Length: 89
Image (tube, rainbow, N blue to C red; front, side):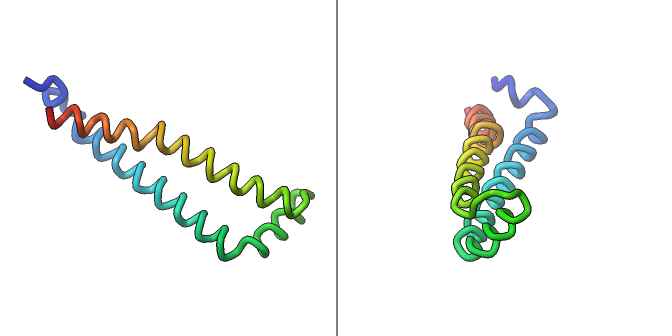
């Protein structure tokens, strides 16, 4: 008997974490592609807007992507995998 299948919200939670994980991963891929192809114009724009050196802006981009990746894994991907594994057993 699977206790999680008795809960009416199991499918909704699985869907929520699945879509949230997919959107987060998609955003990470989009941000990385934009950083690869538009690093120069974006770093100049953000450096000018925030008064930061261009080299520091590029470092902040990588720090942002790394932190977002960690947050997405902890908040969405790992709970999704856990719910799927629990529901299958």
